[in-house]
Each structure stands twice: as C-alpha cells, then as structure tokens.
Image (tube, rainbow, N blue to C red; front, side, top):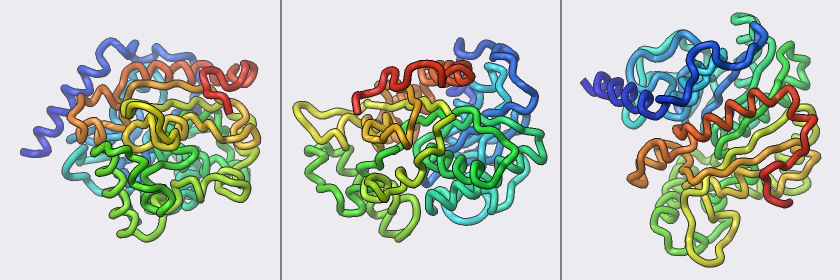
Length: 351
C-alpha cells in the first residue's frame, strides 16, 4: 500500500510541477543520434539507473533528486539517462521511506554505480565507467552532464577520467545544481573547520550541521570528509588538481539562496539552500585555470525536495523541482555549442 500511495503522490506532484513547462516530445533542438544528457545525483543519494523509455514503476521514477529533471528533459525531446547511485558500496536497491522507488529497470553492477558516501574520485571513476558503458551498449557518443549537489563534483571527476583515458565519448557541457564547488558549510562544521556560532542561532542551520556531523563521524571517510574548504580549496587542493579539465567545456552554475539571516554573516554559510552556500554553488573563489568558462544563475530555492520537506515547504521550492531551474537547464543545453564564444562569468559574482 505504501508503494502505491508513493506512486500516486509522485505522479500528481510531478504532473503539477511540470505542467506547461515541457513542449512535448521532440520540442528540443535537433541533436545527433548519439547525444545524451546524463543526470548525476549527489551525496548520500540512492538513485536508480533509468533510460529514456525505462524507469522505476513505483514511487519516484528516478529517485528524489532526478525524477522531475528527467521528466522535463524527456518532455523537451532529450535522450536522458540517470546514473545509478547507492549510499554505500554495491548495486542500487529499491528505496524505502522519503523519495521511495521500486520495480526499476536493469540494475547495473557496483563498478558502474556511484558510491554517494565514498570518495569523490572513486565516484568519478565509476561514473566514467558508466558513461563508457552507455557508449558501448546504447551508442552514446556525446554527453551533457547535469550534476545535482555532489553530483557536480562526481561529474568533474568523471570528466577528468574520461579525458585521460582516451574515452570515445565527448563531454559537451556541464550544468551543476547546488554543487559545493568550494565545499559545504555542513562538512566544514563536521570537520571542525567552522564553529556552530556561524549559524547565527538559526535552528534549521544548527540542526543540519549537527546531523551531518553525526553522519560523517559514522562513516569516517568519503564524500562527507572531502566536501569542505580544506580538502577542495588551496594550491594543493582537489580543485587545483582539476585545472585544465574544463577548458573546452562550458559550465552553467545554478545556486539556491532560500535561507538568509539579517545583518552581516559569513558568506561561506549565508545565504544558502540549506546545505550549500550560494557563493560555493556559484564557484566564486574558483580560478579561471580550474573553471575557464562559466555562467551563473540564482534562485530563491532550497537544495532539494528533502530540504524543502524538512523546512515545511512545497517541493517546487527546491532546485531539483523548480520549473524555472529547468528552463535555465534547457537554455544551457541549447547554448552549449556556441557558449565558449560568449563572454564568461555572465551573471556570476566578481572573483
């Protein structure tokens, strides 16, 4: 019964959000037969593998991060796949509780499944293997990555692997949605790089950082230990190691700033989407050698429907469920062939 109710809620919610936003099959630009969009979910996520014509039969068809994005892309005529992710080692299993899904298409092996609690680079290796599998099994030759949250970092790691292993798949563009390019203040707190006082007494912030720290201490290693400013930033940090990887790939950065506090506050924390600060999602301190061509967009949104749900807000207030975000994504995909000829940093904060 719970699965049946979840399916009904998912269908009604998705229909209400996407109503009027998709132009029907084939309304996207004319693209090569081998062109595909790969949607990558974030940290601690459980997401099933889906194809343009196969998805989970019960609950949220592609998980709580990817379902609405996938439906929008398909409605615009894109060939869209969601990459499998598990919050631990192993293959994806049916998800219970919030964002439940079940009765899914073929389950791919662990070595093509992102461990969404593991290290960023290992996740990238698994994602790259998945992309190469799409080439061999589905005829995919060109990919646009759409990464939500840590999925943006996993995508970047995969792009580096694909570029250095002479993959036959071309990466056409990267769009990141709520991605912690400079780290998340949740991980900063969990790794003793930030004091609780930076939450400025905001109870939602305090609850988020303390719960995240409990999860990080439980796991001891992986994404939660890495998605902070110490690991990612600096001359020897993870970002610096990615220098040059995105030189010929246009990047669209989408941030949420739903939560604010009055007066002056630490910009590494405020405004934020409930998990990632706006300036981190906009890669404000990321240098041109790492991110040569970027465009930025900000919405009054939360990080995800999970955060919206926790805050007592409608799902459409989430970056992953907001039709305005989908339109920006569509524009980024359409503009990708000529984006490198346009000025960089459009809509972005000054470095």
